[in-house]
Structure formats: C-alpha cells, structure tokens
Length: 338
Image (cartoon, rainbow, N blue to C red; front, side, top):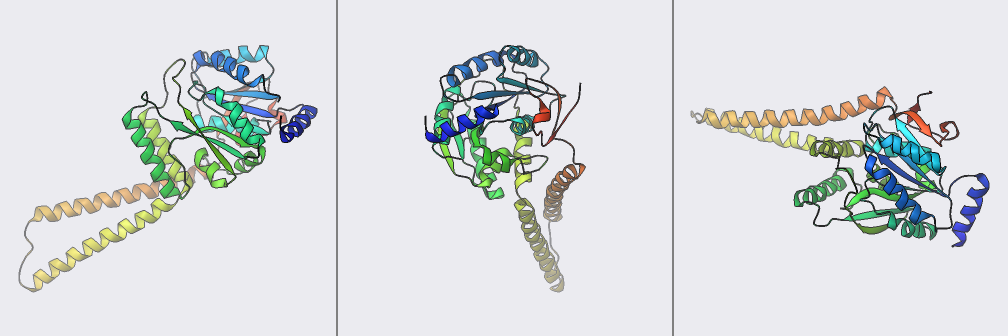
C-alpha cells in the first residue's frame, strides 16, 4: 500500500466515510445487479481500502430496484438511489457523483461490459498521483462495423466542434479524484456531456485500454435514435462553433446567390435572357434548404438556453436505501420526501 493511500484510508476511516465510491447507473438491468455486485466485491474486498457502491435506478420498469434494495439490506456498503422516472444515463451518473462520498469515484455501466477486473489498476494509478484515469474501449468483433465507424466520426467531429480532444473509444468508465469531482460538479448545464467535461477540466489523466465484454443479461437500451440525440446534445452543451460554421455557410450561399444575380443582370444588359428555369428553381430550393438548416441550428441553441433558464432539476429522487441524502449534497436534483 502506498503512503498516499495509507493516509487516505486512515483519514476516511476516522471520518466514517469511504475511500472509494463506485457509481453505477442502471436502467432495466434486473438480471445484472447481483452478478455485478458479486464481481465488484470479489475485486475490491482484497484491497486495503474502504469502499461504497452507489447504484442509481434510472426509472426502471422491471425488478431492478427490488434487486438493489435486497442487496443493500444485507450489505451496508451498497447504496441505492431510485429516480421517480427515467431521467437518462448522464443524469443518473450526475446523481451518483453528487452523492458519492469517496476520495476517488469510479463510474461504470451496470451491464458487465465495463470489466470490474480493471478497477485495481485504475486505483493504483490514482494512488500514484493521477487525478483522472480514463479507459479506452477496444472494440471486438461483436461490435458492428457501422457502430465503430459512427463512433469514430462522432469523436472526431466533437473534438473539432467543441475544441476539446476526446479520443475514439472514450466512455463513462473512469476514475475521478475528489478534487476533479468537486470541480466537475460546479459545471451546471442541463445536458452536460461528462466525457467532454472531464477532458475540458484539464487534470492529469492516464488512459487504460480495455476489451468490451459481452452483456451478462438483457439487451442494450441505446437505440440509434438515442445515440443521435446524445451526440447532438453533446455538441450543443460544449460548443458554439456550429453557430460560427452556420454564419460562414450563410455567407457563402449569399455570395453564390449574389453572383447569380449579377450574372442575370449582365445578361439582361446584353439583351439576352438566362435559360433553364429548372436550374434556377433548383438553386432557390437549395438556398431555402440551407436557410432552414441554419435556422434549425439556431433553434437548437435557443432550446438549450430555454432549458437552462427553466432551472429544473436534472433528476428527482423518489427513495434511497443506506443513503441519507441530507448528509450529502445532491447538487443537481431534488429529493421527494416519503
């Protein structure tokens, strides 16, 4: 055990808090709750540090919360948060992060595709001084070609548009030091993209590759529609560069239209006419299409501003188990008393 971890373990033990928090958002993962907890305890119990496991039930309609509650009744280290309805993966992560007590916090998915066996190595890097330990997904044959290509294009486009370099294969499987977490929780946005936000903060980071495991049970809840919405939200929450691009596109199309007008006027002065009304109509239709696209970009930003001004909570907590929210700061949410 390193001197740093010894100091941390002693201080948190005296305060009755955990050195490590593992935050896991769950949406209809009934068949994965117990296998995940068994594997986490198998990996973490041999380590010389105290820990807690914070499971966030994101409005599941199956028996996910029943499984979480049953596990928490037999192990006080398991904390449960149950949303009043489904608020989305990123908001579930924010709930767990804002209520986590550890000096280091690991976030991971609950479908067993993020291997718990990597946690000890992540913790070792943190003990050696890394403020952030990120993981890089190595896609195998089980990941389709289309998904790999779209993922690659998204991260390249996001890195350009947001001016925040996020590498291909980035995920929400990471470790954050308490200092990083406290700064992250200061970033208030109704649709915060955590992968970009962590990179934007700029703390020292270590990258660890991992192989995606097969889901233990159930199926992925991320449809193409959700992934497209997630990608659009990520860009809107981090960058205004699309607005600048819209200005340049509008300027170029305006110049093209002006050039055509000049050409028509010159032809008129020469006593000629411009033939082919179909090409003119096509150009007008194209310009209107560009105009509507630019208006859509502006409208998307206005919608984001409208959401922020409403100041609604990112999540509503219905109930908890083994967790007194009054002792922790649920920065972005609201707890419904029972």
